Length: 101
Image (cartoon, rainbow, N blue to C red):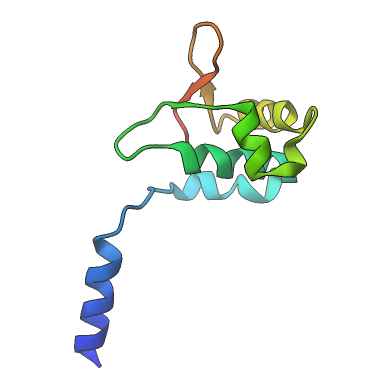
């Protein structure tokens, strides 16, 4: 049994992962469905070793149809208001840094 567990642990440890801070997990129940959808999109876009991501409205809506219309911007605002993400200074396209979850 230990051999099987050891092999499973190796397989999991070799896969890419995101670090989730326990403080950030406390915010999840407070986020609305659009905030969670945008967060999932941002985490999907996040490259290993990077803390900045460029978001694309059209791509986000394609992956999460409930973000159509103002849903995307409502979700972004919610994440900004809770301090989960921070907007990088500059013009469009929108880049975000300091993803705190």
